[in-house]
Length: 243
Image 1 (cartoon, rainbow, N blue to C red):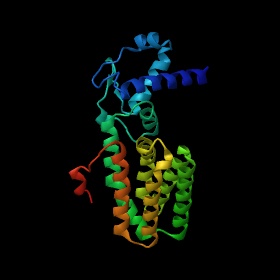
Image 2 (image 1 turned 60 degrees about the vertical axis):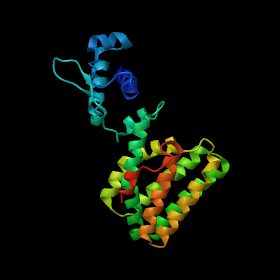
Image 3 (image 1 turned 180 degrees about the vertical axis):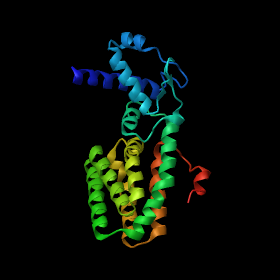
Image 4 (image 1 turned 90 degrees about the vertical axis):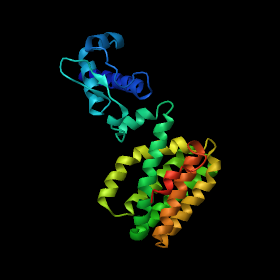
């Protein structure tokens, strides 16, 4: 019975979260009371209470004693939470959110590439080579899941190559966000990703040759090229200020 209640609460949580994330339940809206939600969704009050507490932990709603729960503005959402990112990936993602995710990557990843060029070991280089091989395999065989797996593995190997535990922890938190970003900018025909594979090869060579500035600029190129596919046709001027 307990497992069943947990499953029901998880399902209700996901349904409510999707309605909030995709704009059906807007910020500032007061949710119906527990009894009303239980009736509307055909679940127990216990399941409703558990779902609301879970949503509050993700920053999606605020719960106050003797008041109805309210939907929080996006600024309060825990957007690096894995569950949140999985919910975001269901259906169309707000273009503004995709843009802000790319901004985050542009702030973070070029500096990761710089440190990787300074600190990468032979083991790190081998891991990046394996990941690049997987990317190329996915590109040549038109297998999007294989290409994405290689892309993620490359960026994880890049993070490990910094040998900075704080950056690695932060990168692990960003990894699900990066996966969401990959899916938003990946060509529908994966065979068209040859340029992206070649760009990653140039980044690997800059790291192998211990060229930090070249690695930084090559990572910027990779990210800006990805953004041009779905987000910007021309690079926003603000990115000239991000170094």
